[in-house]
Image (cartoon, rainbow, N blue to C red; front, side, top):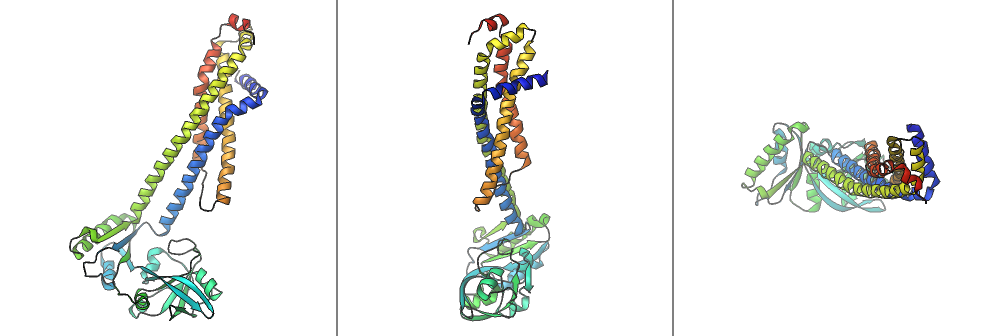
Length: 392
């Protein structure tokens, strides 16, 4: 009986192709809204999560806003590594310079830090070595550059031992970072150089006071304890002024971003669900029209023995098929849209997941059943005699 109802429903749908397509259009648009919007949020979530994960989830970033005329020194920052659960500490400051190699001249971003920065940020070297404590203590003019700097400034990546000029100071290149690594953990089109914190202070003509530094804990579980210890130390260090510094916990950022992205998914999913509801109303309207047009057919079927359940099932299956077919077309167009977004819009990333597709299918089937019940019930309850008398 079900197979026969499905066959009759398909015959009805295919006999009015344009009307059926227009009926499905609401579902197609609704499904596309749901799948594409949530896919974009998924892509953005993955991008942000990967960026945060690349800098580590056991990382604290400390910024000194008011040193109370008593600047934090490099020695004090290094002593923080003696705290329980603290693994590494490293100062971090930035600057810019004009880099020269023979006749080539490029603008380069400088990062002043210590050897511990390599472990804190999880950097990877392609060649050579990173900074050592002796380089920092001796204010050595040595530099670790990224591959972009090596290729654009020197013309090759095997550059260990070469000498480059940074604002007129001659630095020896001691290492080259892997291409995928930069300050954010991703590939960079900027020229970057890591030099000893003390050397950057010297060429920049600035003091050696620390305004920002990183702290990493032994594991993510000990992050809260480390943050509390560092907060207590800095609070006492800067005259019990909690506004003198800020501490950013990378694990907290991850949790916050996850919460924000979940909220965005629900919000966009709700907006898309409204589109699906509108599509469901369209299905109900067209099915009511179909019931009216096929009143005589319903009468004939009842006259030859069809029961109410048979009529109800036929029209309910027809509404369900319209909804599911619209959903299938919507999913197909969504997949093409996601591919197009990823191919032609580099600034936007979209990630289509099976969960979203299954939700779209389930919700579409639910809409088809809910909005198909009334027309099907109306068809099933038509009196046979009146139905036979009906003339189109």
